[in-house]
Image (cartoon, rainbow, N blue to C red; front, side, top):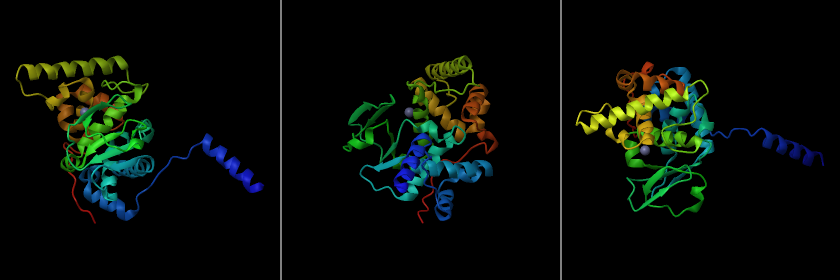
Length: 266
Ligand SMILES: [Zn+2]
């Protein structure tokens, strides 16, 4: 009787105050991850500690699904590390609207196109497993990630953008960030990029960012984290808004932050 009551009370408590799920890496796994993901070595020690925490939270809360490949633990840890970078300060709850990471071995065969619940457009072979689709999954290709981990930051930035319903380059902003300033600054930079491309000039950033405002945000997020000095020099206002949004100052870590993944498996 007592035991049942105890369980009931504990059960209620858990419902009222859900303990955040976490699957922390042990020291060996963490060392291996640091050896594989070059960017971690450039983070200041406070950020490194938060990253380790976020990686555990990410692994505890997200489900990984390899399509046509078996994902090793070190591969899941790497994805978690890159995906944790944008939410170092925002917190893991910024990813609460989705649960699944789908990984293909190679660039997806463009056999299907669909828009997930988050409104993100995908072009890929549609996986058969229905349970992966509760909430817009993040779909990645391992060969692309292995070349450039920034792809992961790009994709998870789309999910942050989707946080207020639309994927339109306008994510839910903290109260301290003026909405009009964000919209004006981003619109002006987006137009500048489109004009540079139209005139045949060398664009400030990857011209893929000019395809639509959501891609613009995802691409500038890549620059923010991995080429912060370039973004800050070319578009200081964009850099400053992103620094405030993400609560981070990557230009203090390094001018350029490596995105490649080493393949030290063991
Ligand atoms: Zn994109």
